Length: 241
Image (cartoon, rainbow, N blue to C red):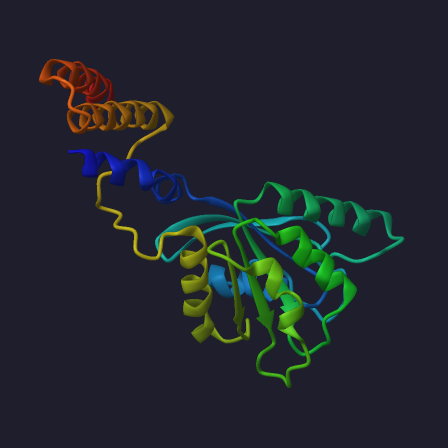
């Protein structure tokens, strides 16, 4: 039974992602293909796409399912220095969306050299669940991904190359998102804790069972271990109702 509790507690974060979905943000400099990526994932032209920098001036939101995970996806204004008051407000909202996102899709132009703006964006993604998307893979590559790699390392970071104009790359993005969110091998039909109250009860039962095992291994009496088992049962009663 302790193994079952261990698995329940360990899978709580993944279960929360599968139950509630994730706030996600597409961020990057102007004309790197953020809106094209949104349209690719949404399956229709949700955002306006033009070659004119600064086309997206406000956050464009779309709910979609990607690999069984519900994303509340926000396409944001291109991040750059600007004197345009309206565009500047859109960029402020872009940073706000990045800061509160549970998943960041950071888009970079693979056909252009890595600049200071790209490095600044990569730094902001460090430590967050984030996928670096090197877009425009259909063009000759000029981007040095090694410069941003340190900010997308570990279990919560991933770097992929795609062309957002080509639907075949949806699977590439889907796999990267699943890896970053930890849902790649999740079983949606497995036992899942429904909320913080159940998580607290499961942790209490987990701790009590650990105490019971420690009591037995330490040579204490069965009565002493039994007290801990009773505590575990009481916690399980709270969990199951």
